[in-house]
Image (cartoon, rainbow, N blue to C red):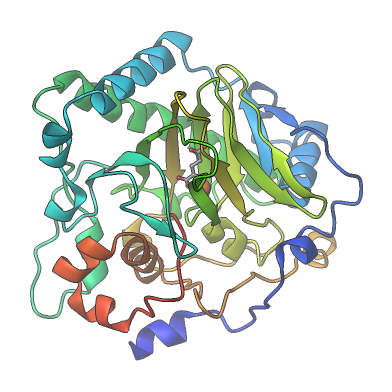
Amino acid sequence: MSTVAQALRPATTSLNAAQALSALDTPLDSLPVINLAELGDSTRHTPAHARLARIARDIGFFYLEGHGIAPEQIERLEAVARQFFALPPEVKQRIAIHHSRHFRGYTGVGGEITRLQPDLREQIDFGEELEPVAQAADTPAWWGLQGPNQWPAELPQLQSDILAWLDTTRDVAKRLLQAFLVALEQPATALNALVAPPHNNRLKIIHYPGQAQGQSDQGVGAHKDGGLLTLLLQDQVGGLQVQTPQGWLDVPPRKNAFVVNIGEMLELATNGYLRANVHRVLSPRSGVSRYSIAYFFSPSLHAQEVPLLDLPSHLAQQARGPESDPLNPLFSHIGTNALKGRVRSHLDVAEKFYPAQFALLDKTAKPSAY
Ligand SMILES: O=C(O)CCC(=O)C(=O)O
Ligand SMILES: [Fe+2]
C-alpha cells in the first residue's frame, strides 16, 4: 500500500461544502443550461466557453442540451430499464453484483450504503464491455475492475441498448470534456490519453421506489461522484438535489437534457479549480417510482495517473486545491482510487473478491455512493 500513499497528491485541503462553493455569491434558484452545440469549436475560446468555466466552477452542476442524441434512443433506453425493474426478484438476483469481481450487476434496495444509511434504490451497474485482465500473483487488484457485464437473459434488448448508450454517451462526454479544456485555456486534446481506449466508463440504471411518510427518504445519500463527468438522465418525478451554501437546491427534470456534474478526478486534474459537488436523491412518495440513468465518464485504468493540468496563472490563482476527506482520501492513481470507491460502496463484492482491501476498510466511516 505504500505506493498508494505516495500516489496521493499532498496538497489537499479539507473544506466543507459551503466553503467549497464560496465563489457562489449570488444564490441560485435554478440550474444553468449549457448548449453543447455552441461549444463545438475546439480551436477557439468563445464566450460560451467562458460561461461554461464559470458555471462549472461556481456550481459544478448544469443541464446539458444540444447533445444531438435522438429522443427516441433516450425513450427506448428508459423503457427497457423500467422493464428490467419490473422482472421478478429471482430473475434480477440471478445477475446480482456479488457474482462479479468487476462490480457489474444488480443491487437490491438497501444493498448500497451511503453515510451509514442504506440507499433506498435498486440498480444495475454496467461498464465498458471488455475482457478481464488475467490475475497473476503480482497483478494489482484494481485491474479486476475491467471485465464483462452481467446481462439478464430474459431481456436481451437491455444489452444492446446499454452497449449503444455507452458508445453514444461516451461521444457526448468526450466533446464536453474538450469544451471544458478549451474553457480552461488548454489544448482540446490535453486529456485525450486519459480517456483513450480501453475505456473505463460506467453506467447505472436506477429505480427509486416510493417511501411512506415517516420512513427514511434516502434514495441515495449525500455524496460526490468519483469520475471525470457524470451525465445523468432522470425521469419526470424529481428528487435530485445539489448542495449549495444556501442549502439543498432542487434539480427538477428537464426533458431530454442531461444533468451534468463534475467528478473528483476532474477536480484533481484542475487542482480544485473545478469542484465535484455534493448531491443526493430524496425518495419519491409512496406509490410513485423514480427512474434514472447515470453515466460516469471516467479515466482509463491504463492511463495510471490523473495528470495535473497547467492552468494559466489567472485561473490557477482561483484553484482551491482538491478537497480530500481524511476518512475517504482521494488518490491520483486511477485504479487505486476507482477500486477504493467500488469497495466502499459494495461490501459484499469487496469481501468476496478483494479481501485485502475489505480488511483495510473502516466499516463505520462510510463512503461515497459512487
Ligand atoms: O439518480 C440520480 O438522480 C442521481 C444518482 C447519483 O447521484 C449517483 O448514482 O451517483
Ligand atoms: Fe452521484
